[in-house]
Length: 221
Image 1 (tube, rainbow, N blue to C red):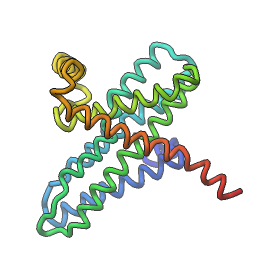
Image 2: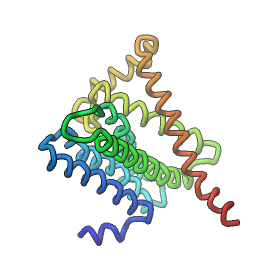
Image 3: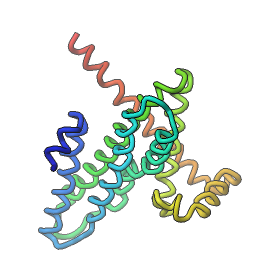
Image 4: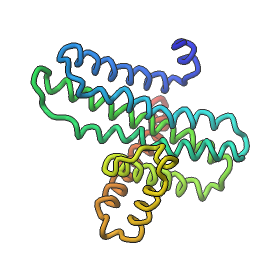
């Protein structure tokens, strides 16, 4: 089954799968050595981080921006923050007995990389889809808006402890929180500083990765 799954992935997606496996193996080894479940949240967080990639891959099948494609796009955006959210798991890093500090550092760094890679890959797939259906002048603003919404979602997850499915199970609280942040920005300066800062970071990473193929062409030339 795994072999069949891997055959459907691009070469870059296969490398992400290998990287995720590395993180999970490191967490497993840590548990076997220390009997400490400190980083047991990583497998679940990594699973959630792959969900937006699943939705963005499905968009390839649609040649028209119809209702089904819109629903897929909404679900993708809803789950997208779960990928870069893993960056914030570095908050859990601290020196603990029985295990070398560098070992835990490798876990959180590899986890953060997995989240970034999944986010960037998924966002690129969505951008390619949107490029077929919106005017060129709206492509960059659309990408920046999606990154900003994603960053705001990370804030809601980390500091407000909302999950992606809360938009369905508890939409009232999320809408109230969002309106409050919009209506009283000075009272929620941390929310906006976090959102803008993370959006800037993700934007820099995203467009840096997009430039890599061009750099390789130059080197070959």
